[in-house]
Every structure is written in C-alpha cells, then in structure tokens.
Image (cartoon, helix red, strand yellow):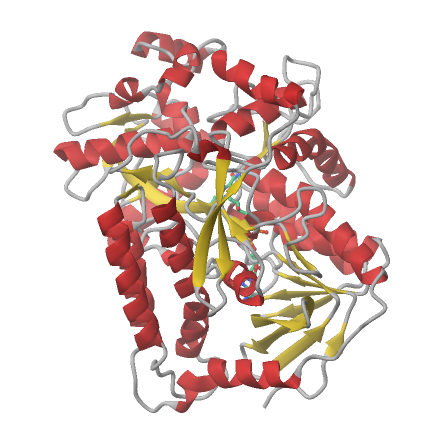
Length: 599
Ligand SMILES: Cc1cc2nc3c(=O)[nH]c(=O)nc-3n(C[C@H](O)[C@H](O)[C@H](O)COP(=O)(O)OP(=O)(O)OC[C@H]3O[C@@H](n4cnc5c(N)ncnc54)[C@H](O)[C@@H]3O)c2cc1C
C-alpha cells in the first residue's frame, strides 16, 4: 500500500551524483528544507568515474580564456547547443572549482603550486583539472561532506518511479525503498532531476547500472519537453574483450600519453579522418604528432580529435573489415613508451586490463571499440535557472539537455554538474520560497502509479524483465548506435513497441523486498520511452551531425543545423517529436565560435 505519511520538503532532489549533491547544497544554503533521493548508496553514482573537469582556471594567463572555452564547446557541439548554457559554463566553471578547493577538494598541482591544467581532446588549450583518476570520487567526497553539514535528509536505495503533479505543477515524487519494497511519498513544490544518463539503453556501455534514463522518462511522463535526444555520445575507446568487460571505459589519457590507434594492417588510420574544420590544428605526419607529445605545442595528434570524430573513424575501419576479430581496433601505447612509464602514468588502466583481460598494457596492445558513454539530450531547461517546461521542475547534470548539442567535450560533463547543479538548487529553493500553495498528492495518481508499478509482482509467470531489457539493449545497439538509417530506425521502433507490449505482461514474483527482477521491471518503465525518444528524434534529424550519423543523409544540413528536435507527450500520451528553432547567440558570441572555426 502507498506510504500513508508523506514527507514534506521545500526541495526534493532526485539523484546523488555531482549534479544532485551540488543542487542540494545550493538549495539548503538558500535556507530550503531539502531531501536527496538516490537509487543506490551514497557515493555510488556515475560521477565517481569522472577523471577530469574543464575550467579556464588561469583565465587571461597562459593563453586560455572563457571565450576560448565557450568557442571550443560550441564548435564541439556542432553549433546546435544552447549558446547561453555554453557561456554560463565557460564563465562560471572557474569560480565553482575554486569554491570546491575552499571546501577541501584536492587537485593535482603544477610546479607553481596552482592546479595543474592538462590537455584534452577538443580543447585547444590545457584546461582540464584532475586528481589523478579520482577526480569524480574526490568531488563526491567533498560535496557529501558539505551536504551532510547542512542537515539535508538522505533517502538512499530508494527508486523514484513517478513525479507527482497537481494541475499543471509538480508537487512531489513517489517511489519505493529497495530493501523493503515500501512506498515513499515526498511532497515539495520544487523537484530537481539529477538522475544521470541513459547508457543502459545500449548493449555496450561505459555507464553504471543506474543509468537507465529515469529522470528523462519521469520528466516526459509528467509532460515536460526533452531536447536533443538523438545525440548519444559513443566514447571511442571501450574494452571489447572479454565479453564480461565489454563496454568498460578505456581512458582517454592513454591517447593523451602517446597511445595510437591502428587497424589490423598496422596503419595509423586517424590521419585519413581529419575533418576540414580541424585541419589547421591537427598534425599531418607521425613525426609532427610525436613532437606534440614531447612538448604539447602546435598541432595535436589526430587521435585527440573530438570523440565523435574518433569514434566514427574507428567504426568506418571496423565496417571496412580492418578491425580485429572481436570487432575492435588496436590501441597501442606499449611500443611507444617504456613499460615502467606506462605502469606509473596509467596505474588504473594498467590494473583494469591486467585484472579483467589478462593484458599487460606495458608490453601488449589493447583492443578497443566505441562504447555508449554520455547522453547529450535531456530535459529542456531554461539556461539560467535550469527550470523545465512545467512549473516546479528543474534538471541538472546529464539529465538536462542543451549544453553539449551534438557532442560533449572531455571535462565539460563534470563542470556541468557543479555549474548547473548550483543554479538548479538556487532556483528550486527560490521557487519553493515563493510557493504558498503546498497541495497534498493526488491519491488517484498515487494509486494508479502503485498499481502499474507493482503489477509484475502480482504475476506468477510472465516475461523476464532482465531478458526484455537485454533485448531492448540489442535493438538500440544495432539500430541507434553510431551509424543509423531510416530503415533501421523504423525497424527499431517496431521492435521497441513489441518489447513494450511484452513488458506490460512481465513477471517479478517473490515479493517487493530486495527483488532485482522487480527493479529491472521498474527500469524498463524508463528505458522503453527513452529508447523510443532517441529513435524518433534520430528519425527526425535527416542529416549527420556530431554523434548523430545517418548513413542515408551523410552530410550536415544547414537548415537542420538551426533546429533542435524536441520530444513531447502527445494528446494520446504517445511520444511525439517536433522541430524547434534554436536560439541564436548575440553577434559577439556568434563571431567567437565562427572565427575559431574559420581559423
Ligand atoms: C566511465 C566514465 C568516465 C567519465 N569521465 C568523465 C570525465 O573524466 N570528465 C567528464 O566531464 N565527464 C566524465 N564522464 C561523464 C560524467 O561522469 C557524467 O556525465 C556525470 O558524472 C553525471 O553526473 P550526474 O550527477 O548527472 O549523474 P550521476 O553521477 O550518474 O548520478 C545519478 C544519481 O541519480 C540516482 N538515480 C537514478 N535514477 C534514480 C531514481 N529513479 N530514483 C532515485 N535516484 C535515482 C543514481 O543512483 C545516482 O545517485 C564519465 C562518464 C563515465 C561513464
């Protein structure tokens, strides 16, 4: 039975990754009574895997500036992102990082004692801050301590399955405690969605188990717009073998430290795939590229092009039959650096390959292939307040869309959490302060949701939700991954529809307490609409741009480049897409990005 005693707050934050915790901290600092709900235990969020964040900490010195960061972000996004979000990110990330330092967050240091700035793909200047490979862990540790100090209530291992609405406004969230299966009702006039990405919609992903697109689906079901859902980033380097480790991330730092990509003929193929707009800054020969590794000045190696370019090049090689039998290409650092250097510079990757694949990367090559890594699309938000298109809803982090457009740059994912997490938290707290009307939940909505969500528990037999999830992942991997076609996408839509029908008869017998099959059926409530939204958006964008590649429309289309694809809930409750003109930046910012492109 639904929880008889709802818990009342000013702000409920769903998700305890970097975005959720930063939002909670900001809201609590504004004096709001705040709850954070997390599907997993505290500390188990995708953010923990983040290795670097992008910020022009030495703005005006060392040749970097927020304007450069802005222009790189827009160019990386292939000009279809929300320009104001890119401006806010570039301008505010340095202050958010300095603030983290005052809370005790550690970073690697340069000889002058300040934070050391590293190079990263798509950034023309060194602007990545790190703490070894533990940047995300350190960020979570820092934010968790600050949040606890402000008396924020934490609901761990609780899954939110529905946003509660009254009239046209949000009034709370409803879910279940994983350990007991008991219902949980949280009432608040402001809800911040920070549930991370959607990687689990694909068969091969670097994402962790909670990346099931819950925030995207919750927002959509509540009637909010989603945007840019066709843009799913595939990181170029995921492990391909053994099968159990397939998709696991192989850090970009291997390429930053000298690793090169080869096909099975031994060719360093990336030189053949440098797009016109990057030619002026990418080395033309192996000798020129190697000079950059010795001293990172001048033109960079082609392996450090933005992720979409590298992934696409790798996919072309694999499709042309020049890939390995496991469906990957070769990543080689062993022949280029001494084994001791590799062990010391890349300890995490060294252990990962030794433990999981029995490969010593100090002496042996790796096999890698693109892996689903990051969702650029998400809840359509106001850039300044992170407010969604329905009253009382806010979103930040990977759940929000707009900032990254067609492709995210390295480090911008973590910067986004601290910049927009803070803005979302402040705006949510202010919204709550101005809301005198604090309605109870609609009992009918709760009982309907409860009935639907618990239905698999009541069936003694039926389809296995885990197997349905796997089938859906295969459909998405085959039709909606790196290269897409109209026929493939239409076929995927039909298959998603079939999985959805069968999911309506899935069974998870055994009771609601700690029942993984039931959790999988709840995940399907999100994965299915998210998959459909990706496929419908991909059908609508009849061009190739950034991470979205249509084999049947291989070129970028200037008219579509001025459009965002928006996903809405149709009158009958179905998923609909529409083209919406994207907002144009002011002339000075427009010139910044175009001058960079023309340079
Ligand atoms: C392997 C890997 C390495 C990466 N490295 C980098 C990097 O170096 N630099 C960079 O910029 N980006 C990186 N990224 C991307 C970046 O880490 C993520 O985009 C970012 O951490 C997402 O943070 P978030 O706060 O939005 O969500 P997350 O950190 O994923 O947190 C989501 C939270 O929501 C909770 N949740 C989900 N659904 C529900 C629900 N229904 N109810 C309640 N709670 C729920 C989860 O339990 C979790 O607490 C990397 C990503 C991966 C996968």
